[in-house]
Amino acid sequence: VSSLIAGLGIASAIAGLALQDMLKDLIMGANIISDEFFVIGDVVRYKEIEGKVIAFTLKTTKLENISSGDIITVCNRNISEMTRVSGRFVVELPLSYEEEPQKIDAVLQPLCQTVGEMENVKECLYLGLSQLNDSSMVYKIFVGCAPEVKYIVKRQILQQAYGKLREAGIGFPYPQMDVHLKKEASSAPAPQ
Image (cartoon, rainbow, N blue to C red; front, side, top):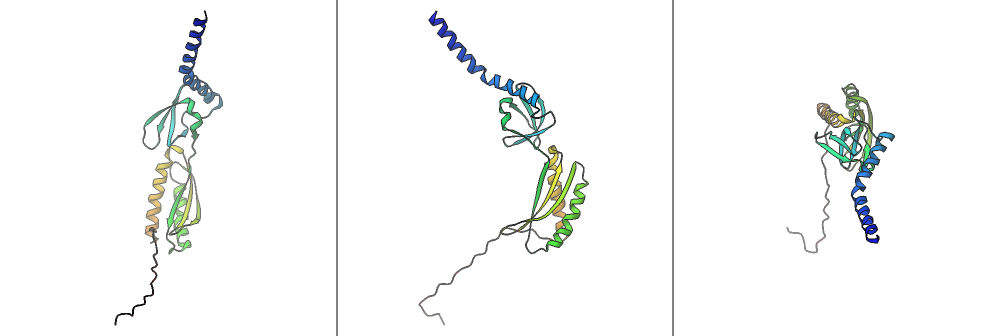
């Protein structure tokens, strides 16, 4: 009897360990549904991947990577590693210190109005000069759009900004370094 009880105990421990992950998936799947962590169509970030939720069951969630189109299956026990992503982002434009801020504003403010009228863009705000770096001034544009198209919209904004700034003759900085050499005083007379 004691060996039968010990055998049942060992079998229960093995079954418990084997079923542990599956039970976690089922419990978290029920939590996703009841607490509405996300719904089909939401864009979420899992580790370094941003993907659109295309399906989920009690055990797994399927994501379509918004940058590559790959399908990723994630076990629901990993829900704590997921973040729901918004479509808001900031475009940073590093520009040269030689440029006049009024000239830059005159180019970027109308650009923001044009971007605000683009398909999929909900809002576009010109934030202006926001940072002074070693070799550049950084101007920022805030954009709100559907999260699944934010990379496409960002590329379109950068292309338009580059073109408009070039047309206006506004230059882009390159990393620079000034080196100053100190002359050493020598005791030998200078050559004649």
